Length: 218
Image (cartoon, rainbow, N blue to C red; front, side, top):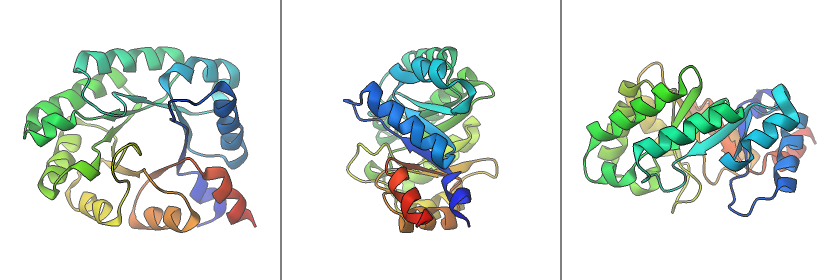
């Protein structure tokens, strides 16, 4: 896989709570240089990025982030505002408390409701694997599949752990044929990017994309 092909699967990410407009502009500039799949940015910056870069940048943002326990109506409102502001892709966090409580049907219903709000736009569902048992991860594979979401995503990057090989392998066994995988959280170098793409991930969330891009180019 070429440099360009690898970076075309990257959601170039800046979600720090103290990210400034200058940080977001730097992120977008790097995304343009390396032709990443998208920039993943805080909701508050979506409109400004869309107004500044228009269709040059594919904008992704987060919903219910990073803890996931906001109510469904609030997540839907976040989606509606993000799409109105010019966002193309949504990464939502499931209600982890509901997952840990075994309320899988409720979680599935919420994902379905958020996907309906997204319409034709891509929905990636963050299940925050670091907090879940294998049984819970499998249940989330089924919920994401049944609810019609586009991707299952490992992590927010704000939990106690990030993307792991064993979780990707587990996903591949239990997701439906229409669901893709995004690895995120702690993916910081070329070796890890290559690993997750070879394992079968369609997207990888990274904040150190420019460093990896320069390394690959050299």
